[in-house]
Image (cartoon, rainbow, N blue to C red; front, top):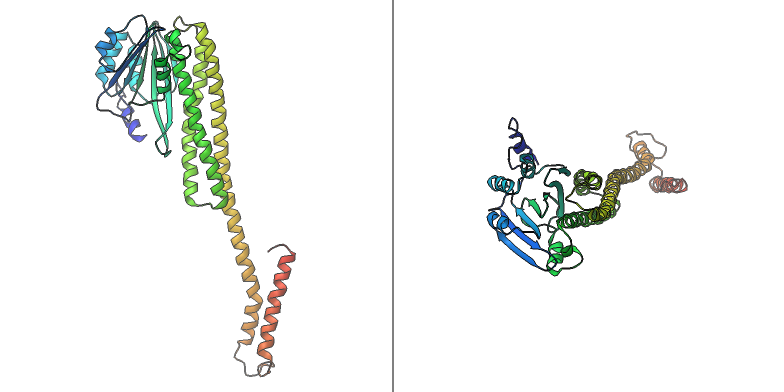
Length: 353
């Protein structure tokens, strides 16, 4: 995160619209893929050039995906080919954008966060997804290859559902829907981890658990920042009137809005559970410490009278009434054991043991 913030500072003093990549992920080369379709035909190219992608563009739905944003020259060429505003190009390369939506004369610009759990469940991975919705095209920009849209691509290939029958605005809705649904998988992973951590904290609290709770608090705070603007974004899509988005698609957007509200509620619940887990960790440690202190206090209390008796008869006086008494030593032991038993019975009656 620090590395990314340093790069943002390099934009200070530059004119608006200056394209500088501020992301963390760089690939060997940017990859452009093309997916064209209508109800009867499909044309898919896994890797193509910008010139071919523009040349193949026709009246069908044209989904052009760009993986790799460090190539500033390519972003500039895309901007010229599709008449994108310089501020849009700047936001595409500045990967720390807050989720938002902006309306222009000939396109709609949407910024979202793609959240996934890294392989092995070791942590949260975040990536900015930028979408440019035009009349007959949809541009998507991501920092590196790999995303959560493969199920949607498969639906397009197999012509499942209504996606091949509708336009590019429905494709943008479908991308939003898949992206939002992927948040549920991330949150489910966190919910499972919180439950396991809760059981471990109550059974055997350790400093490692506290470190993991701290990491979860930071990650859920990041989740909150990523998903809270989502509701505002979907709401803006529903409110604003645009010729690029039909009323039928806006009806589908209500479902995405409902999902975004559910996600926010789950995130807030998770944050409360993690905060409660932190309090439970401290309470458990305090309880265990109190138990230890109680045991040590009882042991010390038992040995106080014993130490007194041993100290009295350990004095080096020549004249002591019990010094030469034949049964003095066993009687002293009997008295000390009786005192210990009496104190233990007293502690038991007081429920201190």
